[in-house]
Amino acid sequence: MAAGTYNNPGEYIEHHLTFFAKPVGEDGFWTLNVDSLATSIILGVIGLGSIWWVVRGATSGVPNRRQAFVELLIEFVDDQAKGIFYQGDRSKFIAPAALTVFVWVVLMNAMDLLPIDMITIVLGWFHLHEWRPVPTADVNTTFALSMSVFVLSIYFAIAVKGLGGWLHEMFCAPFGASPLLWPANLLFNLVEYVSKTLSHSLRLFGNMYAGEILFLLLWLLAATSPAGTLFAILLGLGWAIFHILIVLLQAYIFMMLTIVYISMAHEHH
Amino acid sequence: MNITLTLIAQALVFAAFIWFTAKFVWPYVLRAIETRQKTIADGLAAAEQGHRSLELSTRQADEAIKEARNRAAEILGQAEKRSAQLIEEAKVAAKEEGSREKATAKAEIEQEVARARELLREHVAELAVAGAEKILRREVDARAHAQLLEEIKRQF
Image (cartoon, rainbow over all chains, first blue to last red; front, side):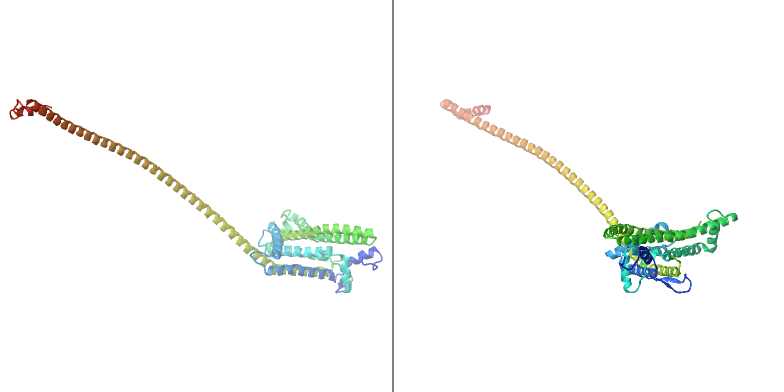
Protein backbone atom coordinates (compact mmCIF):
# COMPACT_ATOMS: atom_id res chain seq x y z
CA MET A 1 0.00 0.00 0.00
CA ALA A 2 1.52 3.26 -1.03
CA ALA A 3 1.46 5.09 2.26
CA GLY A 4 -0.90 7.97 2.72
CA THR A 5 -2.58 7.75 -0.64
CA TYR A 6 -5.56 5.68 0.43
CA ASN A 7 -8.17 6.65 2.99
CA ASN A 8 -9.55 3.19 3.60
CA PRO A 9 -9.01 -0.42 2.56
CA GLY A 10 -11.92 -0.31 0.16
CA GLU A 11 -10.28 2.45 -1.78
CA TYR A 12 -7.03 0.51 -1.97
CA ILE A 13 -8.70 -2.57 -3.39
CA GLU A 14 -10.88 -0.58 -5.71
CA HIS A 15 -7.88 1.25 -7.04
CA HIS A 16 -6.04 -1.93 -7.79
CA LEU A 17 -9.06 -3.45 -9.47
CA THR A 18 -9.67 -0.53 -11.81
CA PHE A 19 -8.62 -0.95 -15.40
CA PHE A 20 -6.83 1.68 -17.37
CA ALA A 21 -9.83 1.94 -19.67
CA LYS A 22 -9.70 4.22 -22.64
CA PRO A 23 -13.05 5.04 -24.29
CA VAL A 24 -13.02 4.96 -28.06
CA GLY A 25 -16.75 5.46 -28.62
CA GLU A 26 -19.89 6.60 -26.87
CA ASP A 27 -21.16 3.28 -25.61
CA GLY A 28 -19.65 1.44 -22.61
CA PHE A 29 -18.63 -1.37 -24.96
CA TRP A 30 -16.37 0.92 -26.96
CA THR A 31 -13.55 1.06 -24.49
CA LEU A 32 -10.13 -0.50 -24.56
CA ASN A 33 -8.43 -1.83 -21.43
CA VAL A 34 -5.05 -0.45 -22.28
CA ASP A 35 -3.35 -2.16 -19.36
CA SER A 36 -4.53 -5.66 -20.29
CA LEU A 37 -3.78 -5.11 -23.94
CA ALA A 38 -0.35 -3.57 -23.45
CA THR A 39 0.76 -6.09 -20.83
CA SER A 40 -0.43 -9.07 -22.85
CA ILE A 41 1.17 -7.82 -26.06
CA ILE A 42 4.47 -7.08 -24.32
CA LEU A 43 4.46 -10.50 -22.64
CA GLY A 44 3.54 -12.30 -25.83
CA VAL A 45 6.24 -10.53 -27.76
CA ILE A 46 8.81 -11.25 -25.05
CA GLY A 47 7.78 -14.90 -24.62
CA LEU A 48 7.26 -15.93 -28.21
CA GLY A 49 9.96 -13.57 -29.45
CA SER A 50 12.59 -15.10 -27.20
CA ILE A 51 11.53 -18.59 -28.25
CA TRP A 52 11.80 -17.46 -31.86
CA TRP A 53 15.22 -15.95 -31.14
CA VAL A 54 16.42 -19.25 -29.66
CA VAL A 55 15.02 -21.51 -32.37
CA ARG A 56 16.23 -19.35 -35.24
CA GLY A 57 19.71 -20.66 -34.57
CA ALA A 58 18.47 -24.12 -33.63
CA THR A 59 20.94 -26.85 -34.38
CA SER A 60 20.11 -30.45 -34.99
CA GLY A 61 23.35 -31.40 -33.26
CA VAL A 62 23.98 -31.07 -29.55
CA PRO A 63 21.71 -28.27 -28.32
CA ASN A 64 22.90 -25.65 -25.88
CA ARG A 65 20.97 -25.03 -22.67
CA ARG A 66 18.69 -22.38 -24.09
CA GLN A 67 17.74 -24.53 -27.02
CA ALA A 68 17.34 -27.59 -24.82
CA PHE A 69 14.92 -25.68 -22.62
CA VAL A 70 12.88 -24.47 -25.58
CA GLU A 71 12.86 -27.97 -27.05
CA LEU A 72 11.72 -29.36 -23.72
CA LEU A 73 8.84 -26.91 -23.71
CA ILE A 74 7.93 -27.58 -27.31
CA GLU A 75 8.13 -31.34 -26.97
CA PHE A 76 5.99 -31.14 -23.85
CA VAL A 77 3.31 -29.26 -25.78
CA ASP A 78 3.72 -31.52 -28.80
CA ASP A 79 3.30 -34.62 -26.64
CA GLN A 80 0.03 -33.27 -25.28
CA ALA A 81 -1.20 -32.51 -28.79
CA LYS A 82 -0.04 -35.93 -29.99
CA GLY A 83 -2.04 -37.66 -27.28
CA ILE A 84 -5.30 -35.94 -28.15
CA PHE A 85 -5.25 -34.91 -31.77
CA TYR A 86 -5.22 -37.70 -34.36
CA GLN A 87 -7.09 -36.10 -37.23
CA GLY A 88 -4.36 -34.77 -39.44
CA ASP A 89 -1.06 -32.97 -39.20
CA ARG A 90 -0.84 -31.43 -35.75
CA SER A 91 2.17 -29.33 -36.69
CA LYS A 92 0.08 -27.32 -39.10
CA PHE A 93 -2.09 -25.57 -36.61
CA ILE A 94 -3.07 -27.20 -33.36
CA ALA A 95 0.35 -27.73 -31.79
CA PRO A 96 1.69 -24.23 -32.52
CA ALA A 97 -1.60 -22.80 -31.27
CA ALA A 98 -1.28 -24.82 -28.08
CA LEU A 99 2.27 -23.60 -27.62
CA THR A 100 1.14 -20.02 -28.09
CA VAL A 101 -1.63 -20.45 -25.55
CA PHE A 102 0.62 -22.10 -23.01
CA VAL A 103 3.50 -19.63 -23.20
CA TRP A 104 1.29 -16.61 -23.34
CA VAL A 105 -1.05 -17.65 -20.52
CA VAL A 106 1.83 -18.69 -18.26
CA LEU A 107 3.46 -15.31 -18.66
CA MET A 108 0.22 -13.41 -18.18
CA ASN A 109 -0.65 -15.46 -15.10
CA ALA A 110 2.83 -14.97 -13.71
CA MET A 111 2.24 -11.23 -13.51
CA ASP A 112 0.29 -12.04 -10.35
CA LEU A 113 3.59 -12.79 -8.65
CA LEU A 114 4.97 -9.30 -9.17
CA PRO A 115 4.58 -6.94 -6.19
CA ILE A 116 1.54 -4.92 -7.17
CA ASP A 117 2.32 -1.73 -5.24
CA MET A 118 5.82 -1.48 -6.65
CA ILE A 119 4.35 -1.64 -10.12
CA THR A 120 1.90 1.09 -9.12
CA ILE A 121 4.73 3.29 -7.84
CA VAL A 122 6.90 2.80 -10.91
CA LEU A 123 4.03 3.37 -13.32
CA GLY A 124 2.99 6.38 -11.23
CA TRP A 125 6.19 8.10 -12.36
CA PHE A 126 4.80 7.90 -15.88
CA HIS A 127 1.40 9.15 -14.69
CA LEU A 128 -0.16 5.74 -15.25
CA HIS A 129 -2.16 5.60 -12.07
CA GLU A 130 -4.54 2.81 -12.93
CA TRP A 131 -2.90 -0.33 -14.19
CA ARG A 132 -3.84 -3.95 -13.59
CA PRO A 133 -0.81 -6.03 -14.45
CA VAL A 134 -2.54 -9.44 -14.78
CA PRO A 135 -4.23 -9.64 -18.18
CA THR A 136 -5.80 -13.01 -17.38
CA ALA A 137 -7.61 -11.43 -14.42
CA ASP A 138 -9.51 -9.48 -17.05
CA VAL A 139 -12.55 -11.32 -18.44
CA ASN A 140 -11.95 -9.66 -21.75
CA THR A 141 -8.66 -11.48 -22.17
CA THR A 142 -9.91 -14.90 -21.11
CA PHE A 143 -13.07 -14.52 -23.18
CA ALA A 144 -10.99 -13.39 -26.13
CA LEU A 145 -9.03 -16.61 -25.86
CA SER A 146 -11.98 -18.92 -25.28
CA MET A 147 -14.10 -17.32 -27.98
CA SER A 148 -11.22 -17.57 -30.40
CA VAL A 149 -11.12 -21.27 -29.60
CA PHE A 150 -14.90 -21.40 -30.06
CA VAL A 151 -14.62 -19.77 -33.47
CA LEU A 152 -11.77 -22.08 -34.40
CA SER A 153 -13.72 -25.16 -33.37
CA ILE A 154 -16.66 -24.12 -35.53
CA TYR A 155 -14.30 -23.29 -38.37
CA PHE A 156 -12.60 -26.70 -38.18
CA ALA A 157 -15.92 -28.50 -37.77
CA ILE A 158 -17.13 -26.95 -41.02
CA ALA A 159 -13.80 -27.32 -42.76
CA VAL A 160 -13.56 -31.02 -41.91
CA LYS A 161 -17.19 -32.12 -42.28
CA GLY A 162 -18.52 -29.45 -44.63
CA LEU A 163 -21.30 -27.08 -43.75
CA GLY A 164 -23.92 -29.77 -44.34
CA GLY A 165 -22.10 -32.28 -42.22
CA TRP A 166 -21.75 -29.84 -39.39
CA LEU A 167 -25.40 -28.81 -39.52
CA HIS A 168 -26.39 -32.46 -39.68
CA GLU A 169 -24.39 -33.06 -36.56
CA MET A 170 -25.90 -30.07 -34.82
CA PHE A 171 -29.39 -31.47 -35.40
CA CYS A 172 -28.84 -35.21 -35.33
CA ALA A 173 -26.24 -35.81 -32.61
CA PRO A 174 -26.07 -36.97 -29.89
CA PHE A 175 -29.63 -38.29 -29.42
CA GLY A 176 -30.53 -39.47 -32.91
CA ALA A 177 -31.55 -38.43 -36.39
CA SER A 178 -35.33 -38.50 -35.89
CA PRO A 179 -36.88 -35.08 -36.74
CA LEU A 180 -38.66 -35.17 -33.40
CA LEU A 181 -35.31 -35.06 -31.70
CA TRP A 182 -33.90 -32.17 -33.72
CA PRO A 183 -34.80 -29.45 -31.20
CA ALA A 184 -33.34 -31.48 -28.35
CA ASN A 185 -30.14 -32.12 -30.29
CA LEU A 186 -29.77 -28.51 -31.30
CA LEU A 187 -30.41 -27.30 -27.78
CA PHE A 188 -27.93 -29.79 -26.39
CA ASN A 189 -25.25 -28.74 -28.85
CA LEU A 190 -25.81 -25.05 -28.25
CA VAL A 191 -25.63 -25.53 -24.50
CA GLU A 192 -22.46 -27.53 -25.00
CA TYR A 193 -20.84 -24.83 -27.09
CA VAL A 194 -21.83 -22.08 -24.67
CA SER A 195 -20.83 -23.97 -21.56
CA LYS A 196 -17.51 -25.04 -23.04
CA THR A 197 -16.65 -21.48 -23.94
CA LEU A 198 -17.84 -20.04 -20.64
CA SER A 199 -16.13 -22.59 -18.43
CA HIS A 200 -12.97 -22.38 -20.51
CA SER A 201 -12.58 -18.68 -19.90
CA LEU A 202 -14.13 -18.31 -16.46
CA ARG A 203 -11.98 -21.06 -14.93
CA LEU A 204 -8.83 -19.16 -15.80
CA PHE A 205 -10.30 -15.79 -14.96
CA GLY A 206 -11.64 -16.94 -11.58
CA ASN A 207 -8.34 -18.45 -10.51
CA MET A 208 -6.28 -15.44 -11.45
CA TYR A 209 -8.76 -12.95 -10.10
CA ALA A 210 -8.95 -14.79 -6.77
CA GLY A 211 -5.17 -14.88 -6.60
CA GLU A 212 -5.00 -11.18 -7.21
CA ILE A 213 -7.61 -10.42 -4.54
CA LEU A 214 -5.87 -12.63 -2.01
CA PHE A 215 -2.60 -10.79 -2.58
CA LEU A 216 -4.39 -7.46 -2.15
CA LEU A 217 -5.92 -8.63 1.13
CA LEU A 218 -2.52 -9.76 2.37
CA TRP A 219 -1.00 -6.39 1.52
CA LEU A 220 -3.88 -4.73 3.42
CA LEU A 221 -2.92 -6.86 6.39
CA ALA A 222 0.65 -5.68 5.95
CA ALA A 223 -0.46 -2.07 6.35
CA THR A 224 -2.11 -2.60 9.73
CA SER A 225 0.89 -3.01 12.06
CA PRO A 226 4.49 -4.32 12.16
CA ALA A 227 3.17 -7.70 13.29
CA GLY A 228 0.69 -7.58 10.45
CA THR A 229 3.54 -6.83 8.05
CA LEU A 230 5.44 -9.87 9.30
CA PHE A 231 2.43 -12.10 8.92
CA ALA A 232 1.67 -10.67 5.52
CA ILE A 233 5.22 -11.41 4.40
CA LEU A 234 5.00 -15.02 5.57
CA LEU A 235 1.53 -15.58 4.20
CA GLY A 236 2.38 -13.74 1.00
CA LEU A 237 5.41 -15.96 0.53
CA GLY A 238 3.31 -19.07 1.10
CA TRP A 239 0.60 -17.91 -1.26
CA ALA A 240 3.12 -16.87 -3.91
CA ILE A 241 4.77 -20.29 -3.84
CA PHE A 242 1.38 -21.98 -4.07
CA HIS A 243 0.44 -19.53 -6.79
CA ILE A 244 3.35 -20.70 -8.97
CA LEU A 245 1.53 -24.02 -9.12
CA ILE A 246 -1.75 -22.31 -9.99
CA VAL A 247 -0.11 -20.18 -12.66
CA LEU A 248 1.34 -23.22 -14.42
CA LEU A 249 -1.63 -25.49 -13.77
CA GLN A 250 -4.19 -23.04 -15.11
CA ALA A 251 -2.11 -22.38 -18.19
CA TYR A 252 -1.75 -26.12 -18.71
CA ILE A 253 -5.49 -26.69 -18.29
CA PHE A 254 -6.26 -23.87 -20.66
CA MET A 255 -3.91 -25.29 -23.25
CA MET A 256 -5.27 -28.83 -22.87
CA LEU A 257 -8.85 -27.66 -23.23
CA THR A 258 -7.88 -25.69 -26.32
CA ILE A 259 -6.44 -28.84 -27.86
CA VAL A 260 -9.42 -30.93 -26.76
CA TYR A 261 -12.05 -28.54 -28.11
CA ILE A 262 -10.33 -28.14 -31.47
CA SER A 263 -9.79 -31.91 -31.70
CA MET A 264 -13.45 -32.53 -30.91
CA ALA A 265 -14.38 -30.27 -33.78
CA HIS A 266 -12.52 -32.63 -36.10
CA GLU A 267 -14.37 -35.72 -34.92
CA HIS A 268 -17.28 -37.27 -36.76
CA HIS A 269 -20.20 -38.41 -34.67
CA MET B 1 -15.90 -6.80 -15.34
CA ASN B 2 -17.46 -5.33 -18.44
CA ILE B 3 -17.12 -6.95 -21.79
CA THR B 4 -15.59 -4.31 -23.98
CA LEU B 5 -13.82 -3.84 -27.25
CA THR B 6 -10.77 -5.19 -25.42
CA LEU B 7 -12.12 -8.66 -26.13
CA ILE B 8 -11.93 -8.23 -29.87
CA ALA B 9 -8.53 -6.58 -29.65
CA GLN B 10 -7.21 -9.43 -27.52
CA ALA B 11 -8.64 -11.98 -29.93
CA LEU B 12 -6.79 -10.30 -32.78
CA VAL B 13 -3.57 -10.27 -30.76
CA PHE B 14 -4.09 -13.95 -30.02
CA ALA B 15 -4.59 -14.71 -33.71
CA ALA B 16 -1.44 -12.79 -34.57
CA PHE B 17 0.56 -14.70 -31.98
CA ILE B 18 -0.73 -18.06 -33.20
CA TRP B 19 0.18 -17.10 -36.75
CA PHE B 20 3.66 -16.05 -35.64
CA THR B 21 4.25 -19.28 -33.71
CA ALA B 22 2.94 -21.50 -36.48
CA LYS B 23 4.97 -19.72 -39.11
CA PHE B 24 8.25 -18.79 -37.44
CA VAL B 25 8.71 -20.86 -34.30
CA TRP B 26 7.27 -24.32 -34.77
CA PRO B 27 8.85 -25.36 -38.10
CA TYR B 28 12.39 -24.43 -36.99
CA VAL B 29 12.24 -26.47 -33.82
CA LEU B 30 10.49 -29.36 -35.43
CA ARG B 31 13.07 -29.53 -38.18
CA ALA B 32 15.91 -29.47 -35.65
CA ILE B 33 14.27 -32.10 -33.47
CA GLU B 34 13.38 -34.36 -36.37
CA THR B 35 16.86 -34.12 -37.86
CA ARG B 36 18.37 -34.95 -34.50
CA GLN B 37 15.98 -37.84 -34.00
CA LYS B 38 17.01 -39.21 -37.36
CA THR B 39 20.69 -38.80 -36.47
CA ILE B 40 20.15 -40.60 -33.20
CA ALA B 41 18.14 -43.34 -34.87
CA ASP B 42 20.87 -43.80 -37.47
CA GLY B 43 23.50 -43.90 -34.75
CA LEU B 44 21.55 -46.49 -32.83
CA ALA B 45 21.10 -48.57 -35.96
CA ALA B 46 24.83 -48.35 -36.68
CA ALA B 47 25.60 -49.38 -33.11
CA GLU B 48 23.24 -52.30 -33.47
CA GLN B 49 24.92 -53.25 -36.73
CA GLY B 50 28.35 -53.04 -35.11
CA HIS B 51 27.14 -55.12 -32.23
CA ARG B 52 25.88 -57.78 -34.59
CA SER B 53 29.09 -57.90 -36.63
CA LEU B 54 31.12 -58.05 -33.43
CA GLU B 55 29.05 -61.02 -32.34
CA LEU B 56 29.53 -62.65 -35.71
CA SER B 57 33.29 -62.20 -35.73
CA THR B 58 33.51 -63.41 -32.13
CA ARG B 59 31.70 -66.54 -33.14
CA GLN B 60 34.00 -66.98 -36.15
CA ALA B 61 37.07 -66.48 -33.98
CA ASP B 62 35.76 -69.03 -31.51
CA GLU B 63 35.24 -71.52 -34.27
CA ALA B 64 38.72 -70.92 -35.66
CA ILE B 65 40.25 -71.39 -32.22
CA LYS B 66 38.29 -74.57 -31.68
CA GLU B 67 39.37 -75.91 -35.04
CA ALA B 68 43.00 -75.05 -34.38
CA ARG B 69 42.82 -76.75 -31.01
CA ASN B 70 41.36 -79.90 -32.55
CA ARG B 71 44.03 -79.86 -35.20
CA ALA B 72 46.77 -79.45 -32.61
CA ALA B 73 45.36 -82.33 -30.59
CA GLU B 74 45.26 -84.47 -33.71
CA ILE B 75 48.86 -83.62 -34.57
CA LEU B 76 49.93 -84.33 -31.02
CA GLY B 77 48.20 -87.72 -31.12
CA GLN B 78 49.83 -88.61 -34.40
CA ALA B 79 53.22 -87.59 -33.08
CA GLU B 80 52.75 -89.69 -29.98
CA LYS B 81 51.73 -92.67 -32.04
CA ARG B 82 54.66 -92.15 -34.35
CA SER B 83 57.14 -91.92 -31.50
CA ALA B 84 55.76 -95.06 -29.91
CA GLN B 85 56.08 -96.78 -33.24
CA LEU B 86 59.65 -95.54 -33.66
CA ILE B 87 60.60 -96.77 -30.20
CA GLU B 88 59.07 -100.12 -30.98
CA GLU B 89 60.96 -100.34 -34.26
CA ALA B 90 64.18 -99.35 -32.60
CA LYS B 91 63.67 -102.01 -29.95
CA VAL B 92 63.08 -104.67 -32.57
CA ALA B 93 66.08 -103.54 -34.59
CA ALA B 94 68.31 -103.53 -31.51
CA LYS B 95 67.17 -107.01 -30.56
CA GLU B 96 67.88 -108.28 -34.06
CA GLU B 97 71.25 -106.60 -34.12
CA GLY B 98 72.08 -108.09 -30.74
CA SER B 99 71.15 -111.60 -31.75
CA ARG B 100 73.07 -111.26 -34.98
CA GLU B 101 76.17 -110.14 -33.16
CA LYS B 102 75.75 -112.95 -30.69
CA ALA B 103 75.52 -115.43 -33.55
CA THR B 104 78.62 -113.97 -35.22
CA ALA B 105 80.54 -114.13 -31.97
CA LYS B 106 79.43 -117.70 -31.41
CA ALA B 107 80.53 -118.72 -34.90
CA GLU B 108 83.88 -117.03 -34.42
CA ILE B 109 84.36 -118.75 -31.12
CA GLU B 110 83.50 -122.09 -32.68
CA GLN B 111 85.86 -121.42 -35.52
CA GLU B 112 88.56 -120.50 -33.09
CA VAL B 113 87.90 -123.62 -31.06
CA ALA B 114 88.02 -125.77 -34.21
CA ARG B 115 91.28 -124.19 -35.27
CA ALA B 116 92.78 -124.63 -31.83
CA ARG B 117 91.66 -128.22 -31.81
CA GLU B 118 93.21 -128.76 -35.24
CA LEU B 119 96.41 -127.18 -34.05
CA LEU B 120 96.40 -129.26 -30.94
CA ARG B 121 95.78 -132.37 -32.90
CA GLU B 122 98.70 -131.62 -35.20
CA HIS B 123 100.88 -130.84 -32.24
CA VAL B 124 99.87 -134.03 -30.45
CA ALA B 125 100.42 -136.05 -33.61
CA GLU B 126 103.81 -134.53 -34.15
CA LEU B 127 104.61 -135.12 -30.54
CA ALA B 128 103.47 -138.71 -30.79
CA VAL B 129 105.37 -139.19 -34.01
CA ALA B 130 108.43 -137.56 -32.51
CA GLY B 131 108.11 -139.81 -29.48
CA ALA B 132 107.59 -142.84 -31.57
CA GLU B 133 110.46 -141.82 -33.84
CA LYS B 134 112.74 -141.56 -30.82
CA ILE B 135 111.65 -144.94 -29.60
CA LEU B 136 111.74 -146.60 -32.95
CA ARG B 137 114.73 -144.77 -34.46
CA ARG B 138 116.84 -147.50 -33.84
CA GLU B 139 114.66 -150.28 -35.10
CA VAL B 140 112.25 -148.78 -37.55
CA ASP B 141 112.90 -147.52 -40.98
CA ALA B 142 111.17 -144.25 -41.28
CA ARG B 143 110.63 -144.66 -44.89
CA ALA B 144 109.22 -148.17 -44.53
CA HIS B 145 106.71 -147.18 -41.92
CA ALA B 146 105.77 -143.79 -43.28
CA GLN B 147 102.44 -145.11 -44.47
CA LEU B 148 101.67 -146.52 -41.10
CA LEU B 149 102.59 -143.27 -39.34
CA GLU B 150 100.49 -141.24 -41.60
CA GLU B 151 97.57 -143.48 -40.79
CA ILE B 152 98.13 -143.07 -37.05
CA LYS B 153 98.36 -139.31 -37.46
CA ARG B 154 95.00 -139.22 -39.22
CA GLN B 155 93.38 -141.19 -36.42
CA PHE B 156 94.00 -138.44 -33.90
